[in-house]
Image (cartoon, rainbow, N blue to C red):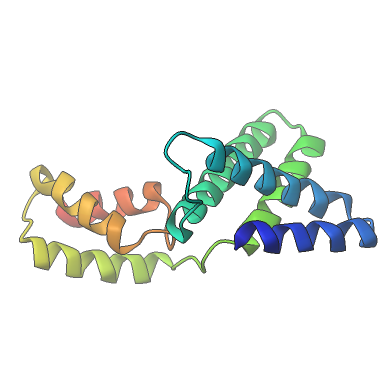
Length: 148
């Protein structure tokens, strides 16, 4: 499903001669094809797997952009941010830190966690609950903060 949408967007970007958009879309298409060809994906990708692939791409772009920014390479930073913007269009709407905090408080209550020792249990449940809606780094920071 995602692959067909990306293919349509690639055609539109080609017609519009939008180089930045085209780069981002081609990166998504390449990652989808790679994920499809991996061992055990003979029946195609689930929506959950597609989201994970997109999250991985977004994380790579953010990390690269941070490095380029630190090295004062604004040309490369701009390219990464343009691609990130395209990738984020296909991801589910990300939750705010306040929304993440509220959901994690509920997870902590339901798991009965009381200290940092229970972080693994809380992280497992929180990652399932917030899959695709928040990145793991933010989830981890909030869990650590609430359990301390």
